[in-house]
Amino acid sequence: MNFPVELIALLLILIAFFAGFVLARRGAERSRGAQVDKLRRSYFRGLNYLLNEQPDKAIEVFLQIAEVDKHTIETHLALGNLFRRRGETDRAIRVHQNLIARPNLTSEQKSLALLELGEDYMRAGLLDRAETLFTDLVSIDTHAATALRQLISVCQQERDWTRGIEFARRLEKTAGEPQSELIAQFLCELSDGKERAGKLDEARRLLAEARMVAPGAVRGYAQESKLAYARQDDPICIEFGARALELDAELTPELMPLIVEAFDRSGQSERAEAFLENAMLRYPGVSPVLAKSRRIAEREGDEAAIRFLSERLKSRPSVRGLAALVDLQIKTSDGAARDQLNSLRELLTRLIRAQSAYRCSKCGFGAKQQHWQCPGCKSWATVRPVHGVAGD
Image 1: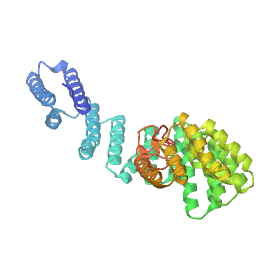
Image 2: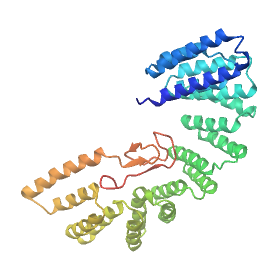
Image 3: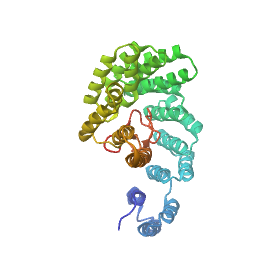
Image 4: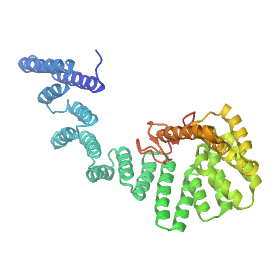
C-alpha cells in the first residue's frame, strides 16, 4: 500500500511522541501503569486510523493524548508544521499559539514556537503579524538569521525593496551569508519603479549601485542597456548590452534586437552583422537566425533568405523558424500553394501561442515573457528561454 507523504509524516510524529512519552516515564511506569496502558490504547487507535488512511481522525486522537510538557514540545511543533503543509493554517496557528501560552517553556522552545507561528501567519497571508513576530526575534537576537530570512521573504511579497535591502545587509553581518546578488535584484526593482515614474536619473543611479554591489549580476547591465536604447544613447546601449550577454547569453532574445538597431542607427551595419554571427555561435536558440534571415531578405531578397533559413533549420529545428520560413514562401507563392501555406501558417501560429517561451529552471513555471523573479516559486534569475523545436 502506498501512503501519501502527509500520512508517513504523521506516522513518524505519532511514533516519536509515543517513544518520547514512554521513555520519559520509564522510571514511573510501575506506579502509573494504568495511565500508560490508556496511552497505549489511544496510541494504537490513532495508528489504526492512520493505516486506514483516516489522517483527520488520527490527528484528533493524537491531540487528545499529547500532553504538553517538556517531553512533547518538539512533537507539537512537528504536528503544527504538518498542519501548515496540509494547508490547514488555522489548526497550525492554534497548535503553536497554545504552545506559546504554556508557562513551562524554555526560552529556546518559545522562540522555536514563535518561528513556526510566524510561518503559519505567512502561509495564511497575515504578513503584518508575521513581520511583527520575526522583528521581535531579531530584536532579542534569538534565531536572528532565520527570522531575517523570513523578513526578507515578507518584504518580497509586499514588494518593499528598501526594507528588503536593509534586512539582507543585516543577514550578511549576522550569518556571514553573501546577499550581494539578492540586494542587486532589489536595487534593480527600485530602479524599475523610478523608471515608471519618469525619474530616469534616479533609475540609472540605482542600476549603477546594483552593478557596484554585484559586478557579476547581469540585470544591472541589461536594464542600463534598455534605458540607453530608449533615449537613443547607442554607444551605452551597445556597451552595456554586450556586457550583459557576456555574463549571460540567455538574454539574447531580449537584448539582441536593441543592440542590432543601435548599431544600425549609429551607421555600424558591419558591426551589427558581426554581432549577429557571434550571437548565432554563442546562443543555441533560433532568435539570431531569424534576425539574420530578415537582414538577408532586405539586402538580397526573399529567395536568398529562404535558402539561408532552410539550411540553418536543418541543424536548429524550430517551430518559430518554420513559421518564418513559411512567411517568406508565402511572399513568393500564389494560387492554391499560397492558400495552403496560409493554412499552415495559421496552424503554426496557434502552436506557438500555446507554448511557453520561458520556463523557470527551479519550479517549471511557464511564461510568455521574461521575468526576473519567477511568479511561481519567487526565485530570482531562474526564468530562462525554452529551447528546442517548440521553443526559441
